[in-house]
Length: 164
Image 1 (tube, one colour):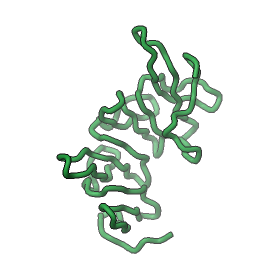
Image 2 (spheres, rainbow, N blue to C red; image 1 turned 180 degrees about the vertical axis):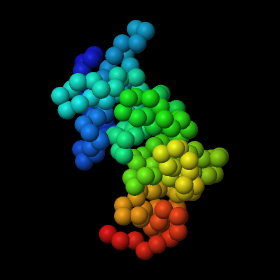
Image 3 (cartoon, one colour; image 1 turned 45 degrees about the vertical axis):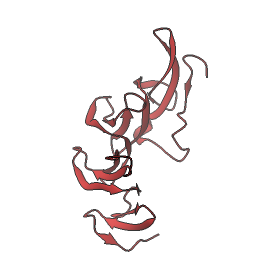
Image 4 (cartoon, rainbow, N blue to C red; image 1 turned 90 degrees about the vertical axis):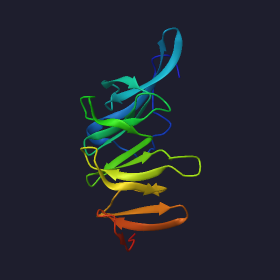
C-alpha cells in the first residue's frame, strides 16, 4: 500500500463485522522519517471515525473493540469515541459475546502456556484464565480447550454438553 492509503488489516476475517459500521483499517504513514503502520476505524465510505493511532485494532462487538497501542505490547478495549475503557492488561483480546470478552494472559514461564479467560465489560474476570483455546459464548455455551482436551462450559465455568 501507498503512504496514506487505507487497507483492511490482515487479522480481520471477511466474516467479521463491526457494530454500526465501525470498520478497522490500517495505513502506512511517516513517523519521524520512518514508515509505520497505524490502525483506526472508518465507516463504509472510508470516512475516518477513530484516528489511526493503534498498532492493532479489532472489530467492535457489543460496543467495545480490542486495541493494542504497540505490536508485542498489551491490549485493552475502547468505546466508539476511542477512549480506553478496559486497561491494556492482556496479550490478546477477542470479541465480546453475551457480555463476556475472551482475553489471553501470558505464560508464567517457558514450561507453561498462555491462558484464555473471560472478562465482563468492567474488565473483571468472570472465568479465570485457564484455557489454551476458547470460543465466544453462543446461547450461554462456549467451546474451550485445555491442551488436547476440548469441551464446553457455561457462564459459571461449569462443564456442559456441547451443542452444534
